[in-house]
Length: 612
Image 1 (cartoon, rainbow, N blue to C red):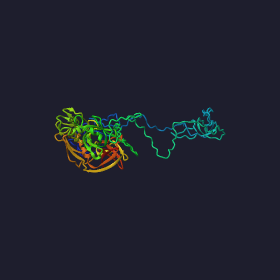
Image 2: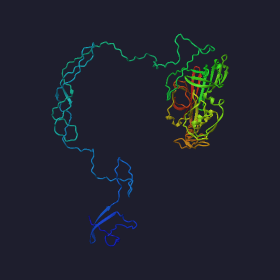
Image 3: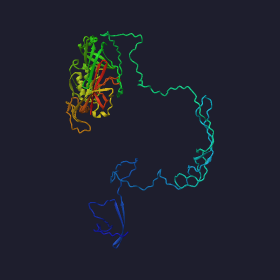
Image 4: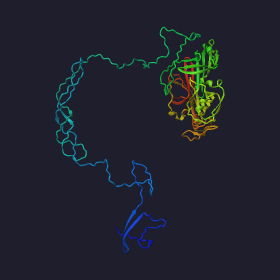
């Protein structure tokens, strides 16, 4: 290395010794770090010299800590220099690995197996043989196992034993065939050698034996139509007398001496889950509709019967044509109220009120009576229930408000509420209402987009959501019924077009919440008219009412299906989801059902709401 000439452009900053050398510009405001030490050893001769410099820096470095995981985010260590992350410098240290990739070592290897050398003539002995069947049965076999003959064989390949031969200097290889070595094999694949042998077996004559098996190959059925037998029918719950039969009639004979045999088969209601109606060529149902008074047990012989219920109604409406023999059983009960009737339609039971009656003289000289009425819940409305004032003086939930409506001075009237909505909080004094019992229940249900549906037989009111699921999510809904086109006939299709809203403002009146709700995934730019109700006092009430408002929009179709009242379906109630497999498979919710019985034909017509 050539000598370096140092040229200083400024005089020394200090007089005397030791001499302080300054390289570069000097800033008086920024002193040199106190922890930097420079030691110079110089030997200057004339204009040249030798300078040995030693630089010692005590600059702190971040502490590199040992971690228990492979990777982690380290916390900064308090020091003069705080660095959140740094790239570690690899250290050259000795490491001992538990495993490593071994290097090949040149050494002699002995191969345990190799492809056999030249074929070797050897004798093979067989330890086990197939025994010859003894003549103990009076049977002669067509074929039998021949005796094995010990013959001389020559092996093409064999399992070689290890032979000490010249060393192999490669790591792994398929050893070459040992040159000219004798190998002894325990087992080998023999090559047949021409040898003479004697055949012990011969063709046997068939022997006749009588065999009896549980199953056999079925014959082809003769020309015609074969129907697979169905499962054995369930035992008939009705009484079947033994012969001779004695007929006992509880009613007097009518005109024409018709014989009426009544057996009420109260079949259990369909189990929860999807009911799939099978595709069949023919559907056969034995239709029965019976009516009798609950208080007296008198049977009313119906010649025709209709009843209907839709999503906007809270009870059934019905009408029947009765035989003249029912003349003395159409009055009111002992308390002066309409008589309660027990009606059974193909095993499905209902409770109805007989409110109106009239003579029907169209069928003279035979006289008939036309009777009509509503369901059991009609006693909660006018003219049987008074108009009252309702409200909540204290904090309540919506379900508690509905239960308190069906009380008289705090005592239950015998009616219960089956609550199917998401309950919400109602502060005291938020709700007041004037009307009958059923009007107050309808007002509470309507606040959250629900509706009231009566129980078929019990004194129970069901509060159900009008849209359990929004139409845009119906593809993922499990239907309650799957009906093929062979089981239902499309009567009509009504198309309805409504504005496409995707946002609505909802809120309470005296108290509660108010704000917009929009359909997820939309811009919320098409707003429906605002909705206000005294019971919208919580976000849960807002959400349920908003779903009902935004679901009843867009292009819709009301499909009317006519089908039987089958045992597996019963009467299909409003609010159930149906997948109809017609020309096009559609998914919808039932909005109404109507029964029409004109002996012996019975049909139910269900109206299904679908969305495009």
